[in-house]
Length: 106
Image 1 (cartoon, rainbow, N blue to C red):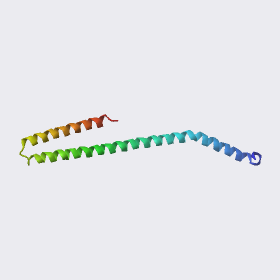
Image 2 (cartoon, rainbow, N blue to C red):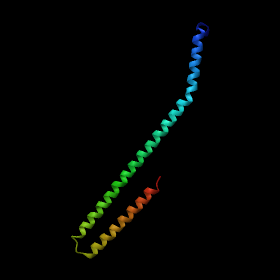
Image 3 (tube, rainbow, N blue to C red):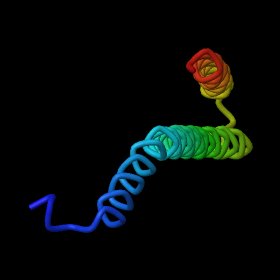
Image 4 (cartoon, helix red, strand yellow):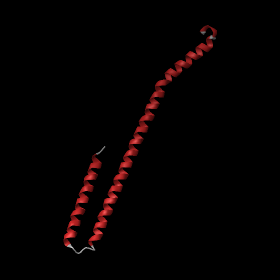
């Protein structure tokens, strides 16, 4: 069958094959780079999502603290006020621990 094709066509096929084989490493390098960029983008999106979730937790904790402080004006019982102060201190400590843990995570 090779004898039935003209020599020019056989040579063109050989050149085309050699060219595609020569370009293959560049194509594979481009695919690897695209995959690396995609992975980095996904990691950044996950990090941003976690940061937004942490911000929501902190906002809820701050709102809870404000609500507790506002309730103290209605309360005349010193023991209840002292308990609320202790609760607020615990919330602030917990928020600090959460922030420290978040900063330590990669």
